[in-house]
Length: 231
Image 1 (cartoon, rainbow, N blue to C red):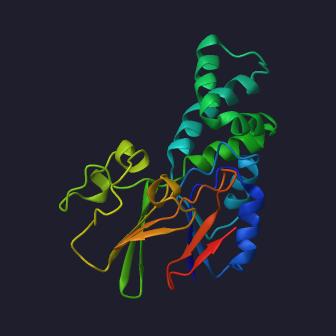
Image 2 (image 1 turned 30 degrees about the vertical axis):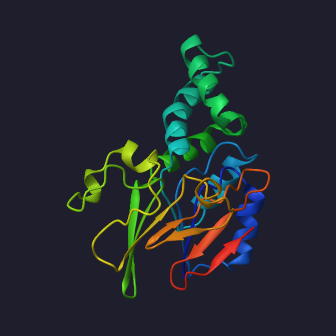
């Protein structure tokens, strides 16, 4: 089976429980639509588990993009034995900290040299989008949406901002082909319809159900059956 999660945000216990809930095995495939890091307690644990599984495919989220841009700078200082960072780097870290980056920064600093290098390399492998054909359906998976959408616009023509930061109109149907579905995270469903459950509008699926919020849930969607799972 093919499964999709999004916006895990460091919720390691929920992530592991979801893998148990769907009985995830080597024959299955899991797509994670970005924002693995920040906010929750153990983003490094989630990343390390994901990278240990060849059948987990990570996509870039806006929080992961920040991590990929800042963690190498932190790593360079730690590798030199520096515990006090430059004013410039400290200011960058402060901005990230205020957007939920504390758990990512702290968890990263607790790793050894090889583990930090592995995390940076893994983040660099995150794709901006994935397309998978399942039976008579095609699923386009992306973190936030397809910003500035045009029917004739190729996926490769979208910018990072358009794919990672967009707040799409939920009712907007992408693609003329009615066999094409779009699966997105980024925008918590509670902001769309007031509910912490997967929101479907036509051929659009929004699956960020606020895993890191007090009343939120980690959601998972099976692409073959459209079955929904929650932790």
